[in-house]
Image (spheres, rainbow, N blue to C red):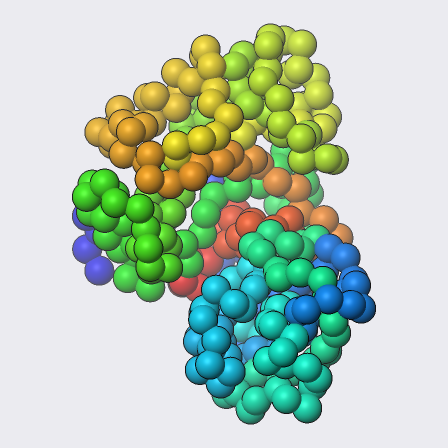
Amino acid sequence: MERGPWLYDPGRWPCLTHDEPGTGGRLREALDDFVVDEVQRAPATGEGTHALVQIRKTDRTTQLVLDDLRRAFGLDRDAIGHAGLKDRRAVTTQWLSLPLAALPGPEAWPELPGVELLAHAVHDRKLHPGDLAENRFSIRVRGAQGEHARAAALMEALQARGVPNYFGPQRFGKLGDNAREGLAFLQRGKKPRHWLDELRSQAVQSWIFNDWVARRLAVATFDTVLTGDVAEKHETGGKFLVGASEVEAPRAARFEISATGPLLGRKYHEAEGPAREVEEAVLDAVGLGRDLFRVLPGTRRTMRLRPRDVEVEAAPDGYRVRFSLPPGAYATAVMRELMKTGAEDEA
């Protein structure tokens, strides 16, 4: 498909390891080539008004499963909680919450296509996006015979410097046009009321964030901090304004902190000084102002992440890689660094 303005194009956002050759290869030739397991932040409380369920789904998006459950139980979409959205062409486990009155026990679970109930418990609250500790990935790359050593070396480099925390192709839709549609919606100046309008509007935020990461890579400030950056402490998630880059740069070099980029909106911690100038340059380049995003809440997102529990092993016709990422991070961001080609086909 021809790429035009605001249509997803991975070439717009460079890899950190662009000077190193990738392994090549192909993803998702079989459903179990891509396995994702959602790890709970805390166990069920055992009391309350919500049912906490763990499901395994195959070749189904989370949104489709939510729609199936809504119809099966006669619930509003907002009554069902989830910690994150999971890929369709994959085998994934994740946690959902429903009103306990609708699902008092596992015997009330309906038959749903491609969905298996793994666990049922009582919980004291509804799940919300981000209510998970991490996602554990197991990904098979085919068509990359003998490349597991190269993949392992690239992973070692990424663990040292961090992975650019780009939003992946899923964020921009099957046709890559979510950001274009979202921009048209935002220009009407209305608050999103439907989940699809919200999703598309968030794609514009994500586009700007990805452009910001790419700009920081281009000016060689990816693994350091600038004066005026809003930095995040990796251990606690706490954020603070960088008063002087020379004071905080050693902490960034030790991967204790990283700069965060804007998901623009009406209320979020704004950067200052030289760091804000980079953000303004990104907005100027696409011809947008901050006021466009006033109908969205806004937040900040860390620029880089470090994969945990990394394993790389040879497999027939390629290799398998396993790693854990924090909530909201995309495995695509890792795989595009390893493969250089083919990783974007997973959208």
